[in-house]
Length: 141
Image (cartoon, rainbow, N blue to C red; front, side, top):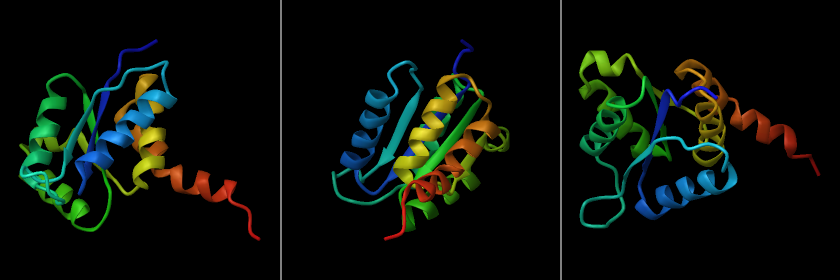
């Protein structure tokens, strides 16, 4: 199996949510081990997002990964992630993508793809396709 070349940053308003999402991915997809960093909640334990924390998480991953996929939960989490990408050194920003994927489904798709050594574009594509995959599973009543 190829080494993991893509890490994942989880941006959430809630540290507990981000940690639970990571735990879910690791427990459902046990055959791989993907580097995941969280940038979730505020330093005081409250709800919120911090672009600086996102930058730090991306920087930690780029030290050991060729690329980084950022998944954000919603609203200002997305805005914090976008601000963080603008704050990154241009060389790091080139190796980082923000996904529009749903948080949990996107994480599972990205985690599996990264775990088998797919490149950043393929990992992002897998995450982004998660919403449609879920939609196809839901039947109309």
